Amino acid sequence: MSNPVDSTGKFYLDVHSLDALRLQAAKDPKQALSAVSRQFESVLMSMMLKSMRDATPQEGLFDSEQTKLYMSMLDQQLSQTLSRKGMGLAEIMTRQLSPGQAGQPVQAPAALKTAQSAPIGSDFISGLLPHALEAAKATGIPAKFMLGQAALETGWGKHMIKSANGRSSHNLFGIKAGKSWTGPVVTALTTEYVNGVPKKVYQNFRAYDSYAESFQDYARLLSSRYASVVTSAQDAAGFAQGLQSAGYATDPDYAGKLMRMFAQNPLNAVA
Image 1 (spheres, rainbow, N blue to C red):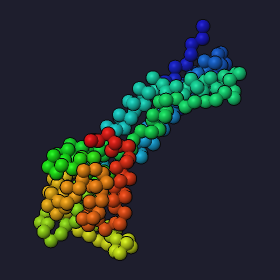
Image 2 (cartoon, helix red, strand yellow):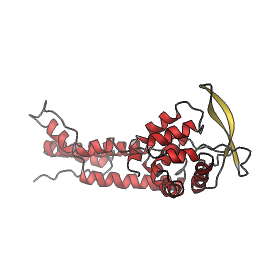
Image 3 (cartoon, one colour):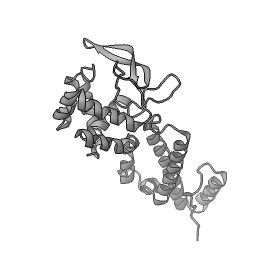
Image 4 (cartoon, rainbow, N blue to C red):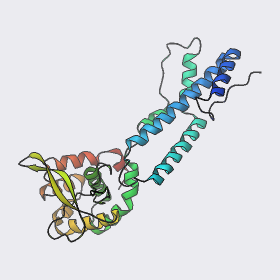
């Protein structure tokens, strides 16, 4: 009885594994085809996980070597788990490449469809959610709206305002440092709109020691200077338009950009 090659736990470029596959192909082509299909599925899953990780923010909240190591270990463990369980792709490839199966329609396996639609920004949301919930209690504004604005202002944490030495300002909401601000300041190049025309200018922004401080200051600002926004924030449109009408940003499409951000998948699960 032939022994099928178990490739799910082996590296796909291992010479011994390839030799075993060649021998298996000579003895039992059908079993070898199944093994090659599983190898291909394993490689594809590794590539998918890497692409998904590359698409999420790599700076800001989780920009440390220790966190990157943990993420890498998690991806490796997930890849191994998926390889053992399989996505169904290997079985489809085996059927399609087997004699007499050519030309049959191929349906993408459900696991593959799920992985392709995995939300971007979930790490950003989970890292800030506790602070957003606290700010929501203080202001009455839903956490989802504040997280959406933070995502818009920082590009999901990838474009956090930083000092000249690379230190994060933890400024999630692009709050400028006016004359009344007595705390730390970071100067950064930003885009301001003058009569609807964008211009690059240097501005002073508030700097904080943590993201919790950023949310606390933001909540105080909304409750004082932008009190009208709090009363109009019964829904997403009211909050977005309220910020623009109150002059929070000079971008004439600020409310529209906020609304488009609120519609993105990672925010849909937030109350």
